[in-house]
Image 1 (tube, one colour):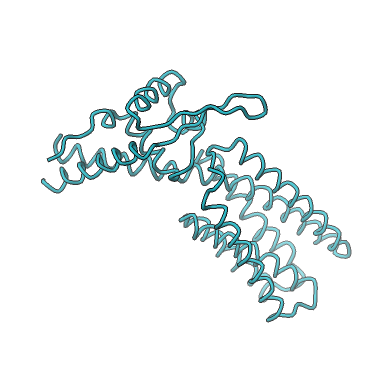
Image 2 (cartoon, helix red, strand yellow; image 1 turned 180 degrees about the vertical axis):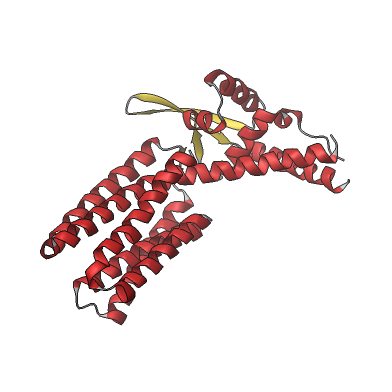
Length: 97
Length: 191
């Protein structure tokens, strides 16, 4: 059986990936909104996003809207695939019971 | 990892995904529900007391609502919880939606041939109900479909059962109060 992706397996990162894959393939989530939705602090969310970005699972971009910087986060194709594989593996484990 | 832990993880994922979808949907739709719910409530209540100004009341209310809707759309595109891509498929869906809505409106006028204010009014409210049902079906949001169905039933009951005397008060609650309450609830419960 395929090993679980340990990067996604961490509960907070699992929630982040679950939320990002739920919002739609091309859509980007606002950092501030994601923080509020997942009830995380700036630092905590930022740290987990950095790890996911380093693995190529998400893409972080900054935009200036009305001269104010806003950060947007999006799951990449690689990240979506890794997340789907993770779910498949979970289902296999459940079936093997 | 054993099967029990895997099952719990899967539940956590499903829950996070549905919470995200519901929260974003509530965030995107609640401003319109609150806006149009408040406008329709005010319009019907004012019409109940100043019937001869109904045309002005609905004209001004509708214009205000349309301007505010455009402002909300602009604000959400710029600073909403989700930034859609420019070529998002939703835009094409939205275009189709308005075309279907226009076809529905033309079909309704052709079939029903409204001859008085109450008919035109019921027609406008049925358009609102229809809009919520279609938007709910396209966004897989059953609560919106239900909301549209409740407004549609409320409109038909108001027109055919309640009668002229209490029609405006009934519609203030059915077409205005329900979406207003729904919008406020979803805004503050599902944030």
